[in-house]
Image 1 (spheres, rainbow, N blue to C red):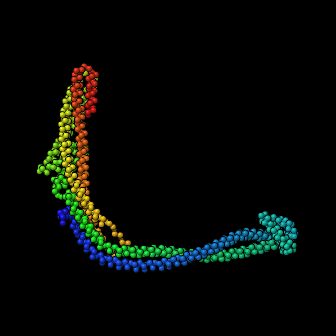
Image 2: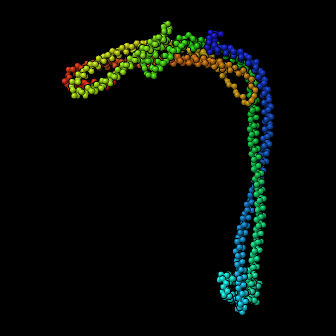
Image 3: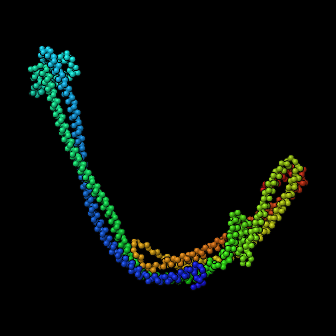
Length: 631
């Protein structure tokens, strides 16, 4: 085993796994023959069972098809019978409705006729009673009435009834009835049958005539009632017959509909069973065909397994050789415990790294060039201070303390500057008003300008010192950037070579182990012969660990590249910021020198021409404008 395999790193584990896999592949060949025999025993059983299922389903399809055809014919016959019964029921219902209408009209006519005849009999009966009473009083008067002349009889009858206080309404009914009977008798006479009442009236008196009329009316009433009874009886008989027929037809209709519904339900059930049976038949045929195809393919694959094992062993050996020849440098870069400044080996290194990271974050957050420069200085001290045997952390603390002192000083100066601006703005505004009234205040303006000139000269001196410090910091940054770039180039070469080797080994292994996928079993069946199966589990484990190595190498390379890009970007940004800061400070120096000279000139002019108010006021305004621009 090479030095790579002996060190504590993932590649060493990969080489061990490759050796174990080679032994496993050899052993699996002994198991395959037994599995192949068991699988083909299952193939024979599946073929027999599938053929039996196909034959059974085919017979069931034929049986259900014939039954469905029979039920379809029964349903058609039922529809025809239902149509005939519906027509008969409609006809009977119409006959019953027509007969009912006729019976109702006959009953209405009977009631009217009966009422008239009953009324006539009652009127005649009362008239006869009155006449008989009058006859007992004066027989000679009624005996003289000529009953052969209807008009004379009616006139005499009217006189008698008037004298007897017989109601006029009843007299009119009586006269109308008598006239009606007379017309009926005359019509009978014209037909050759002399009326009995007329004949009797010729031999008797008016009482006999009225009694004959009453008898005839009673006879007509009796005949009318007999006819009504007969008509009602006949209607009842017809109605009963039609209702019996309707009851029988409706019962037959219900039975036909029930039979049809049962046939339709049975047909639907059989059609559902037929559909299920057809699907089952198709599935059985498909499964049988699939089983035959799969078993034949398995037999064809059996011979290839020996060659596959040989090929896998060759692949493992080739991948192992590539890893041993190409990965030593990358292993050292990724997993060595002696790298200085690249990996964190102890708590002190970790603390220093956290300090650099924190300072960089603060510089980015507050956009501070000073903090960014401090981060670069700390990184350089951490990287190179330990190599010289010095205490880098002490230097780091010194750098941080110096920066804190500098920041505190700048903060105090900014506070003094603000106080100064507030004070001068207030004073200048007051003096501007005073100068308009009192020329004597120009002396204060001269004093203020003198103080400002001295302050500007002091600020110019501080700016020149800061420009010197800035030049020194830029030189340190240039040196650190050059050194870190050389380290990056060395690490990049090692990592790229190692990454290339791992990827070549992965390509060899993946081409073999991932060259094809196992098809899922189409139904329950014993496990297929392994076909050697390329030892996918162990192969994937090796690939997985190699992928970890690849990821580590790639991450380290990406990290180195990212750190290089960040360092270069930070360097360029800081250089740009330093350039801008330098230019700004140089311009400030130039401006402040010019301003101090201008103030000196103004002081001389104000002192020489204090008596000129407008000149003095213009100088104050100029000073006021400059104060506003600055503050």
